[in-house]
Amino acid sequence: MIDLAQNTLDGLFLGSSYALLALGFTLIFGVLRRVNLSYGPAIMLGCYAATWAHLSFGAGLLALAAIAVLCTTLAGAYVERLCFAPHRQSSAIAAMVASFALWMQLEELATLALPRHIYDFPPLYAGAPLDFWGLSLRVESLVMLGAAIAVCALLWWILYRARFGIAVRAVIDQPNAAQLAGISVPRTFMLTFAMASAIGGLAGFLIAASHEQVTPMLGMWSTLKGLLAMMLGGLGSLPGAVAGGLALGLLEAHSQWFLGPQARDLIAYALLFLLLAARVPWMTTRSAS
Amino acid sequence: MSLLGVQDVVTAYGKIEALKGVSLEVAPGSITCLLGPNGAGKTTLMMTIAGILKPKRGRIVFDGADIAGRAPHAIVGRGVALVPENRLVFPGMSVLENLLAGAYQRGDKKTVAEDLERMFGRFPRLKERAAQLAGTLSGGEQQMLAVARALMSRPKLLLMDEPSLGLAPLVVEEIFRIVADLHKDGATIFLVEQNAHMALKVAHHFYLIEQGRISFSGTPGALAEDEVIRRAYLGSSKA
Image 1 (cartoon, chains in turn green, red):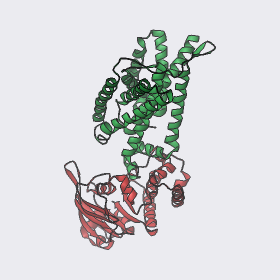
Image 2 (image 1 turned 135 degrees about the vertical axis):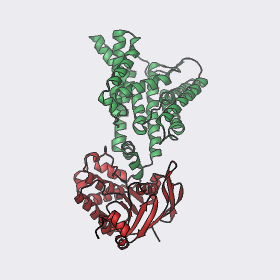
Image 3 (image 1 turned 60 degrees about the vertical axis):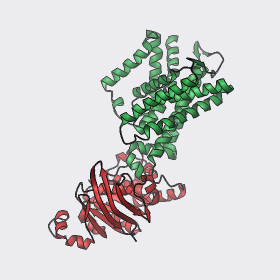
Image 4 (image 1 turned 45 degrees about the vertical axis):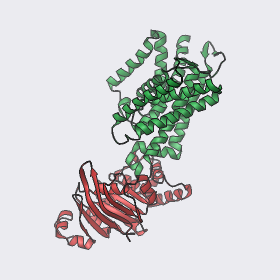
């Protein structure tokens, strides 16, 4: 019983990191209707830049977070300019393939700068896990959950209360009419992309700091987990992204416990396959925001 | 001096030219109406003036400056607003948010709030439904919202692409009453219509477009006199 509770708790915390990744992914998909495969590699580049700053100057955690967010945002803006701005009206496939090319480029750049297979990343919190009635609770996990909630709240505020949110939602709803209303669609695309990348950068920093390491796998891992969580939650829906992330975390935690570590990823993909094959309604509607 | 001058504009979809050298003028303070059959290039012309489509050739002079090929939001900024065909309201946003989107480029919150009140005064139905999602409005209400949204940018020229399309006769009359009201308040309107009977009641100048070319230009009187046009657009009986 205590194991079940512990697994659920672990799953939720793991899921909140997936939810963060999926939020950025979904924001891009919701507005541009394009899949950005370079999302993860941009995050990896941001985290590598932070790792480099840590190794070179021993920069503190807050500075590292700022560097990760900033560099991921810049890498994201670069991807947007190269892959998505030129393919606005034309093929969605072309943009996706182009973003795959930049995946390679960003990953190479990071691994050329820091070629070792693994680098230490400073921990978010060095102390022992907290203990609640036999349940162990990592402080990093709490921070991750808090960040996911804070990002959700901020996104909600931007989309539904701020002036920029009107532009974003108008572009999602009716791109031509948005232009006719005087909203610059290219500018909205770029700002949304930057915002999504910043969220990804924050997610990457928190993930690196709670794993206490970065590896060249971080890019692919982020893209896969983000994509999986986004699809589980229904493409393009922000609440869905959070739900999908949490569901993925819970699923992984429980299947790891009951079926062993090998089954962990298998179960998630099997579920995605089943949901796609069964055409569950929330995954086939193209609702947004 | 005309407010809008379209000069020899060619717009193509790939290799097919939808506009084959269109020239026309819209005088300030007038209601100008563009008639024409389906597929003649009416909507293409509106989209080209608004900047959604880029012309291959020609000039579009608005208020003394060539706006041909500029970005749509820049054209809105210069004072041209299009009420698009099929209205294209933002269905997932509230009526109020639709109106605010129309005023997106305007920084001054106070004058935007004043204009909101003016719109709600002009369109009381929109005020009743301010918090409702635009997608749940009736066709006529959506048309009013589309007009109000365009007006929120404070345009010097209002383009309207078939505002009567798919609406019940009573609603069409209401839309044309609004057009006449806007004109009375000093607006310049360039209107695309298939409903020539209604357009004859309000417009000052008519153009007819056929297969991408302007084939007639004249006053309502001249339009009603023209035997061919009368047969095609007004029915055979004398109006």
